[in-house]
Length: 335
Ligand code: SER
Image (cartoon, rainbow, N blue to C red):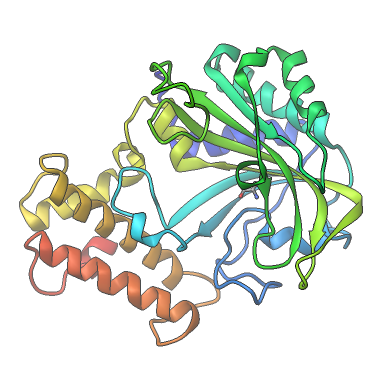
């Protein structure tokens, strides 16, 4: 796969495509959620839209698109491997009680094949296998099939894999359908499927069919007005389209890794141990800069978002020292 689309180009193509399909582009929101006291940061593109998914009228209409800054720190210890990021940008399109499953899947397929130029045989998708609460999603599967995805590339997976949300502890959620690029590498075994960590499949997009609301007591209420939430991570998508092994090899990280190389006199991709420190330092500085630069203005502290920021900065300093960088260096790398 070699499509040298940059992050900026992907962002623009996505927004243009959904605007051409009647969506209004809206601005991304702060990294601190307005309406969700259950989490510290905006974890997904849909997060700022929760009140509208739950029924409030959005001033920009029923079809929206944007790119949103997100932070997920749940797997902060995994940062350092080639794929994890604490900060990332998510592209999204939303239907607020307008189109639903068939149209959402149709838009996704059209964007992937006609705008990004992927062949249907390079794609695999997952759909919800069903449980006692929500039935198996045959409609999603047959929609993908009608568009040209072979049945053997459509995987029915359980709630752990194919149910998304809520973004915090409560709120809108529903079964989803995830899209993966199949690298064409051989399967690692009989159970290899999208979601397997062997590197055959890369998830790039998720269509969530928001039909439920999770309540504080853990129960689910079916929503009368169904919505669609989709999310495509920019960094991962360009990495796979560009044929790169890692998000850190894309242009998004070139200058920050070059800065670390200059200060440390070491080369990225020479040794796995120092590469881990390169990646942690690069990721944590990038995330810290976005937290510090957020319109809600946060500073390091002992609590809340400030505590996470302090932890990121401390970890960045520690890994800078591991690379042999001395003195105070974060400011220089943050520029
Ligand atoms: N909310 C879903 C996700 O974050 C789709 O946008 O994956």
